[in-house]
Amino acid sequence: MRRSKKYSRPVRPLNESAAMGGVHYEAGADGTQYKVHHIASGAKQYVCPGCNGIILVGEAHEVAWTEDTIWGSQYGQDSRRHWHTTCWRHRGRR
Ligand SMILES: [Zn+2]
Image (cartoon, rainbow, N blue to C red; front, side, top):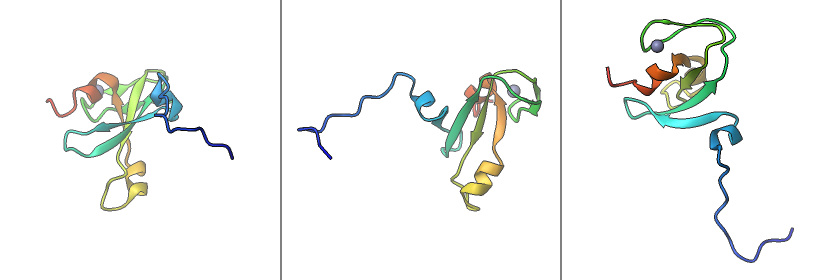
């Protein structure tokens, strides 16, 4: 394996979340780190925990979950929630 002569900082792609499979990290209202996945078009209806409103089929929204739970990362993934994009952005400011 050839190595380059000097280390250079990796070039970050412009759309970093796309490079990570659409998942990026955001801090929740309680300071917990959440993984957030943007859904361009929902496959079914969900209830948004921010406003208790319906996220319609085909509506773009966010899925957020944390793997930082006392029950382990699988529990966090299983309890992921679907949010309206605007509700997620305004979380903790209600
Ligand atoms: Zn909502």
